Length: 148
Image 1 (cartoon, rainbow, N blue to C red):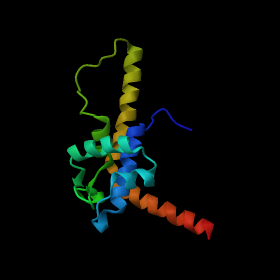
Image 2: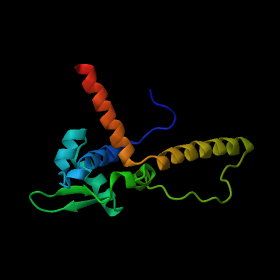
Image 3: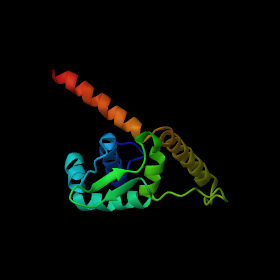
């Protein structure tokens, strides 16, 4: 069941790739696109574009060579989810100028949507990539215990 606010496919894939890189961050070894794509079931070419965007924004770096690939540029707990989502979706700071709505009803709807966006931004600001990694690890533990 999906709600009125949905996560775009490209943002979901970017977050999945970032989680994969974050899980391997402590090892200090780069991951190749095909490894990330296979592990997270992301099309290679699409992932390549997303990683290029994340690299330009300074979230990941690429390393050339036979053992090359991608690495996070910062610790996972220093990467706010809002920053990643904003990078992928191309959000910019909203201009607090005059409203664009032309009727009172449209203003009411616009105000509501701004509240929804504010709530989403608040949640994404509070959470880091490390939070997603921790939740992933906790779920894996629960799944493992379930099968024992």
